[in-house]
Length: 225
Image 1: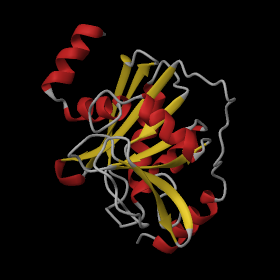
Image 2 (image 1 turned 60 degrees about the vertical axis):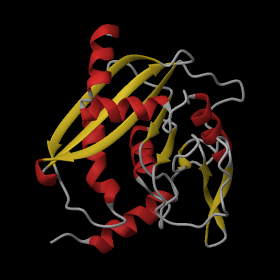
Image 3 (image 1 turned 180 degrees about the horizontal axis):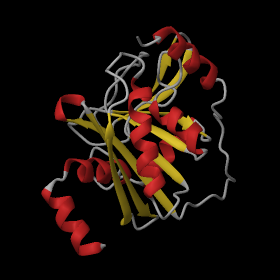
Image 4 (image 1 turned 45 degrees about the horizontal axis):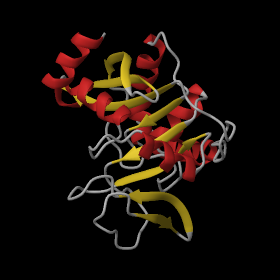
């Protein structure tokens, strides 16, 4: 029997430990930026996490790791981070490099209890993280312009929990939020710095492509690494 009440309480307590300001100086320039993505295989019984590390500012892939583990928790709305983080930690432990910043495909504080997977993972590994989600979990925002770069604050119960960013024309927006040790302005800035004309920033685009074993990414990895 899963004690969902205890897990929700843990989220609330850990959300209070999330650092919502930059833990780096104003002159901070990362050497390595990572992207992290989690998916499920075999009807959800296996959790797959991929972490791709890119060199900044060239955004060339320098390392990636994939971890597959038995799924530890069924899908429970609002508690997804407990299901995803064990595989992320397993992939993290396999890395030889340590990124200065991690973009996680998922929510940071843009979560009903302000503790999505980007915040959960960032707190566990003590690294600045940014939530880069492809869909909205909670909050409301004003109508968004169609021009790439258009943005609106994401508001939930009077609190700004993220920024909705149009990253590419004729594509659904991204929902960017604080993960850990970064403020919202910096989160949006670094996402934009990692854009190369696609909907997703390069770190999470690579993590998603590697995790999915897509042909283009597979060929590029074999050529570059």
